[in-house]
Amino acid sequence: MNKEEIIKNNEGTIVDVRTHSEFMGGSVSGAVNIPLNEVPHRIDELKNMKAPLILCCASGNRSGQAENFLSRQGINCINGGSWLEVNYLTSETA
Image (tube, rainbow, N blue to C red; front, side, top):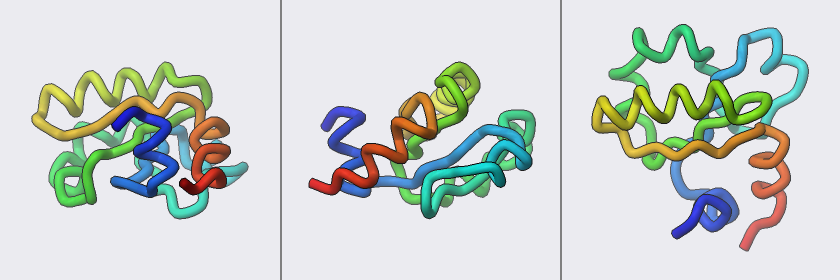
C-alpha cells in the first residue's frame, strides 16, 4: 500500500510533529500531537500506537526527520508530508 492508500483507508495513526501552538491552529481530525523535540522522549508511547504511524507537519521537513529517527528505532512509520495534504486525503475515504 502506498502513502495515499494508507491514509485514505484509515490505516495506522496520524502523528503531527508540529509545535502545540501550530497544532492548535488547525490539524487533521483524530491526529495525535507530539512535537518533534518530544519524539525521542516518547518512544514507548509511539511504539504502542497503531502502526504505521503517518507523520505530518507543516511542509514535510520535520515529519521527515521524525520518520528517519523513528524508523531507526524499529517503528513502522511513513512521512505523510504536510498536514494539509494528509487532511485532504483523510476526507477522500476509499
